[in-house]
Length: 494
Image (cartoon, rainbow, N blue to C red; front, side):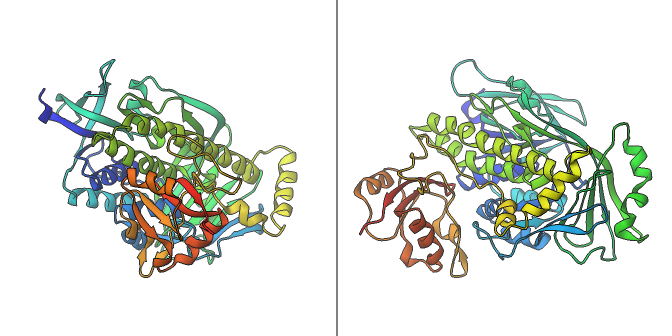
């Protein structure tokens, strides 16, 4: 094995998380080989929701416009009683959220994967091999590399080895990579079987563009219109029911929405909603991302978003390490330390919300739903309930401790538009020192050592939102990491 035969990064899994990770690494000059079992895009619908932070990550690889063309903003969520009458509404009344994009976006996953793979095919330094499975991942007991990956061609059965400096396991809930590094999924105590129906329908089935959650103790359900002429239902399954049982009953299950309208059923299958998180996300230079690292029930639509956050958090750290950054090991150690607590909090939040909206078929279930409806009528409560837990990382070598209660360290900075250009596009891919006036010399020196670009806030179009965010955090300057997370702040200079 020569140095030339070692691939910088191998990515196992060409779903949205894996391909996004490859595109983010390629922006930083890192060559990647992406391996995928399926020869082409898996055609079945799966993920259907992406929040504004997820779209912001797609923007980092130049795909926010393409995503907007295949998606549509969702105006909110309604809770319906058993007769499909709304008893609580979560309106999203802002055209864009903190991250500069609509806060909830509905789409069809195969279309997103086509966009991502098209970008991968156009990108120098990225190679996709379909129709292969990874059977074994091995790495030395000591030293960072190389990692040996054993592949099997699913068409010919031929076996080969590939070596890499780092491997990303983006291979889903049944991850081979997770098994090979000895990680296991911890049970966060939620498992439910649901029946998912994806259809096409030429006739509009609803005037409401958001998501409906049916809080019916006899059978909880979810209904939504996706982009174009596509719709989805999800029905909680009863004990003893099979997929075949419910597949035969699709017209009966959906008739309250369709009134006999013809549907083209694209998929009708069961899906087990699980709450799980891996106990280890890293072994040496092997990392877990997306569903390989965590599984969340879909009640707040964060499964895919969490995977994209993993890719965004790890890509710049891994690229810096491979480029020889002296603190590379510290950067890599921070990946699980930052992402796992946030992912677990998101999963537990999804479980709580799912149980509140659909939870249980016992006598207390109706009482709980009545209380939920009453509480959500309190001014401001519905807005807070509709907000997803924001990304915020605790103190570490990459996030300073708070100087005071309102400090914004660990937060992701907002993204206003600087005229016609989104803020992130102005900043580029590196470190940034945002300054609203004179800069504290200590923070200025830290920024200089990081090679940060200094950007005066007042020189930006759309600076009002940034200036207000900094003022609320009592910051006159903030040092932003490449993933737009605040490492450090300095007080306002009077």
